Length: 68
Image (cartoon, rainbow, N blue to C red; front, side):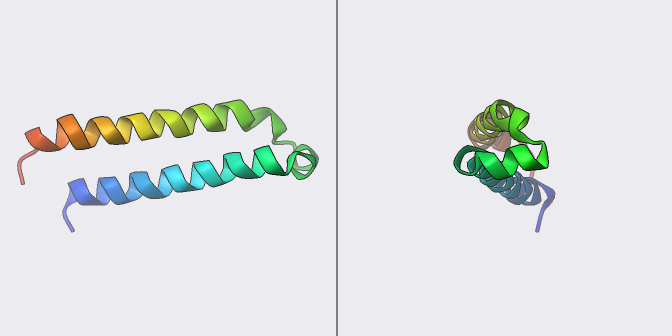
């Protein structure tokens, strides 16, 4: 597997992990508050959107200019 495809796989797992964390914060706020993570809800959502945007940019713009 080349480095550019590893980058895409790693990015996909990062997005899934962050989205799962946000969903946990959103749907189980009592557990998140008990764990002390409730303040991270907005940051987790914004980070997920930012990684999605970066993934789209990488697929559309960056992968065309990378040499195989």
